[in-house]
Length: 282
Figure 1: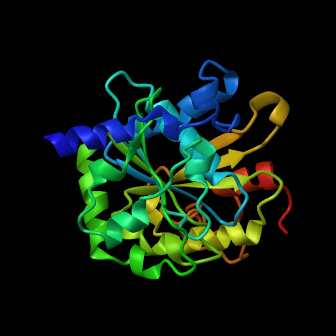
Figure 2: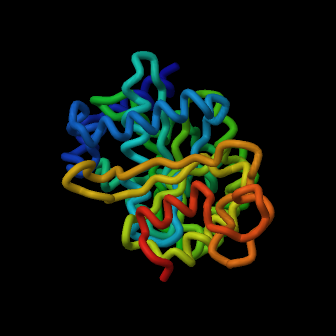
């Protein structure tokens, strides 16, 4: 009991926290229009993906806004009265989640938790003093995180987290640059793909979607489209219906799934979204 109380006391130590990034609108300005756009995503998750509790947030390439999206999604989920939300930094090569949230003491973290069996999830996760949100920082950065990502201990910890929390939001590495996000796909219920409008190369987005198991894709977040209107959130597209390969577009040959006609015409929901937000193929 003493150990448990010590862990809880440490978890809510306000000296570990400083001012967070102003782009985390769901936490710093929860009544704003921008924050309301993230609540649209929350509604989509709760309504059409209720069984998915461990949500990975990824992107094709670095710099598309996945960490901002992951934190804002966790923030709106944490607004529920009885919520218990955990956000995990699994971008172990370049961790930034804790810093964005203002957490000054980032060790021990996930890496330490995997390598040291004496540490516990309850003891390492930091509870934010203002929100129903707990943070599992990456801990020390790793140049080669393969052993951590393939560790049975990590799989056990994520299973434990899925049982203890209403949602576990995981900030994962970009899909194309490294294989890290693909290594953890087995214990992630679904992925949200963040796309930077007018920035993400179309070919790399297509490549990243082709690397993903179709059933794992929850939807696309288009980030930064028309900033004057919608700030950091631009749109949301989901893979509904029986055609599970509709994102395999742009090769001119079709795949027999995307639009149901098998003739390679670019009429899928994703392709419409790509033209709208990314412009002409690059």
